[in-house]
Image (cartoon, rainbow, N blue to C red; front, side, top):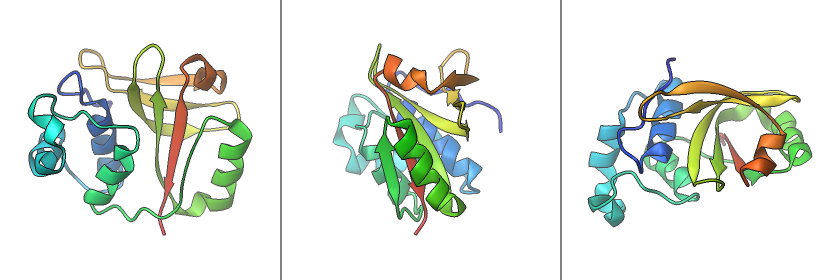
Length: 148
């Protein structure tokens, strides 16, 4: 899949969820998510696509993804241990940063050395490779989602 650009400045989480759902064979667009779920997110009237960190799971469930176990952490050992125990049921993952701004990017690949994410920049979306130290530099958590 090609990198996906966010449709507006508030939409990185919606873009990330869209990209993850499409990768799981559930085709949907950012526009469709915003149109379908605006009644559940009143703030979308003024800032379409803006969601909190915890609303990413809610959006996945609202799009009928079978969310079972999940972990949200910045600890490499904890994430790797949880992933290795549950990897057959892995569905998708996200990096949620707080520095320098709040941002959400879907996980493309994960290894002991680091990971690859899709940066949904509105002008130049791309895949980026980072090491585990990126979590500390950006005050980030990784959210890994597994099916029931």
